[in-house]
Length: 187
Image 1: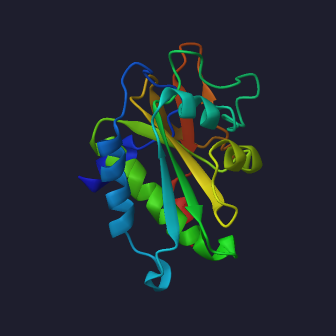
Image 2: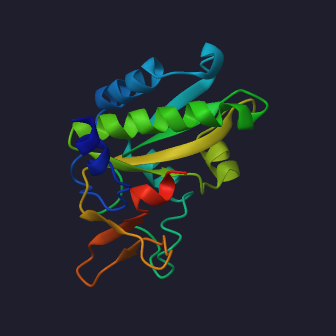
């Protein structure tokens, strides 16, 4: 069921680093993005697939992890993502491709979840450093990075209490994501 797939598709930030994702699987995820809707069918997104250890380290070093978990600096060795998809565009006005990027990210993450993997979308990227380190041509603009891997953490949905939407972890490392009540979302 689609609802269950969406429920399982959480933002995972810790992975089994020894369970690699191969290039073919990354291509399969991009195929889902390719088949997804695109505004005016312009198809202005491009994708860089990263799965080698050396390039993974480059991407990892450009990301800011879990803003609400101030003391946590990101996954430790052994828990890092095993692949990344960098979403780029050549459009000069990146604001106009944000809808396409959101749809592509959702398609990619749902596909990963269906295959038993998970991921996390990053807007907090040191774009200048990543552009330089991965040698993207100057006409490409980095929109997002998606970290992927086999989830090593449990993520649970909980209800928003006192209007606090900040995610948190308990003493066992279980990650909780507060969601607003359905009736409070409908106007």
